[in-house]
Image 1 (tube, rainbow, N blue to C red):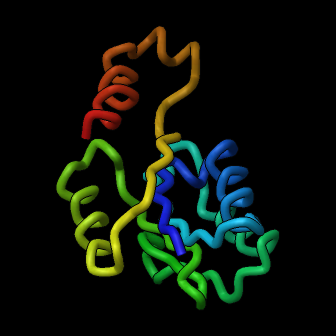
Image 2 (cartoon, rainbow, N blue to C red):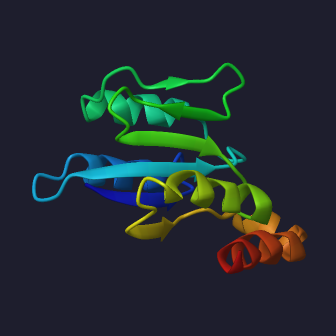
Length: 131
């Protein structure tokens, strides 16, 4: 089974990508989602789990981590700009073979707001990619 890291996986595009990966009939994937939930919600992960018939997707009490009973869908509440927290996710899954690939969707996307605070958008959208 290939493990894929999906940043921003709780958002619209990310959650639809999760459904495609977890529903694949040609390859079996497990997916680790990292998202800071700034523009999204973990509710999307519950919906992905339902659509893909994954059993018992649950979050821990503080909402910072979650997993289904078969380990195909895992979640960690991590900001991609937080290098130590991001490194911890890589370290956590290293003993399980690490990641086969990463799909990076994390970022800010409001045009009006990006004109008001362009440096914040640069920091998040470019900085997180470098991290």
